[in-house]
Image (cartoon, rainbow, N blue to C red):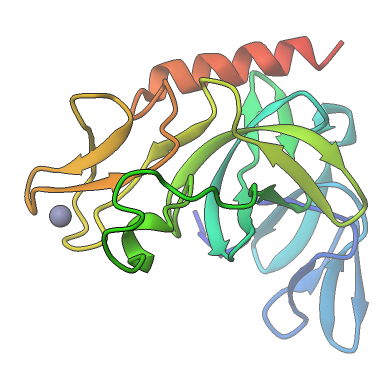
Length: 216
Ligand SMILES: [Zn+2]
């Protein structure tokens, strides 16, 4: 069994697979300037020196509005959080995003507590619903050709997995359930925490349910 980088990866038409030097182009691919690209939707497979794509259009579904998706925060700006959405499969169906997502943040409201006491401390008062590297559940509320717009409003939506900024340990739910806590560093981090935090079974069930609802 060979284990090249792109085996079993879901690919889109036009996705770069490898160079011609690495693999011989086979089924459902094309070559441009020595680079092998996928010609179809499917799963790339590189075996015995050949690069091919097994077309799987029938089983592949695009994510769409109303669905919950799982993703990783890859960028945090003042008013928007960028999310890399993970593909997932349910039984024989593969749900693919094909593009990234964004969460648009509301204009920050001043906090009552401590507002006049001292100058705002960026790291504290500027808390975002999710931070870099967090894994979140979110609902697709809009889609354009470039990006999905995601919402964190549902109770299930929010951070489902986060590591401590300081030590890298997994954060626990704090006892009030509205933040995360690192038992190592004894620090609390504000997040919009999902009701399914660190509950991979429940997350899977939610994705399964929402996959069934949206696959008509
Ligand atoms: Zn820590």
